[in-house]
Length: 154
Image 1 (cartoon, rainbow, N blue to C red):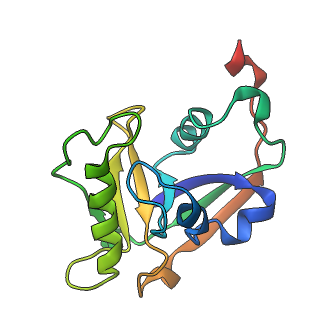
Image 2 (image 1 turned 90 degrees about the vertical axis):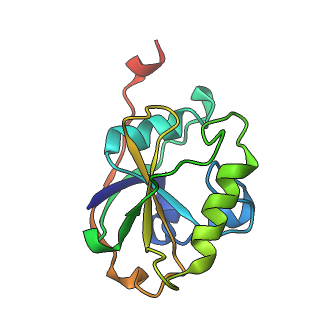
C-alpha cells in the first residue's frame, strides 16, 4: 500500500516518528500516544492538512512524502467507535486508537490501521504505529516539495 504524508521540510526525516502525536491529541489518539497519520492519497493528505491550519499560516516549506507499507501489515477498522467523526474529537475514537497502538504488534495488532476520513468518509487515512516491531518494513518511495495552488483559497 502506498500512503502519503505532508510535513514541513525540517521534519521530513522523522515524519513517521509519532512525535507530534506525543504533544497533541488527534481524532484517533490521545496526547502521548505515538501515532503517525498518513492518507491513502496525496489529495486526501492535502485536505487533511487544510482543515487543520489557517490558510494564512500554511508553511511554505512543505514536503509531500510517499511511503510503501506492505499490505499484510495494514489492518482495517471495520467497526467504528461511536461519534468517531465528531468535532471536536470524541474520546471513543481516541481510546480505540490508543488501544490499537498500545498492543504494538502483540496478538493481531497491525503496523498500520486503515480508518475512514472524517472529511470524506469514502476515503481512508492510514495510522502508523512507530513502535511496532515491523516498523522498519515501511519504505519511503518519494519526497518532493509541495506547492499549494492559491486557487484553493478563492
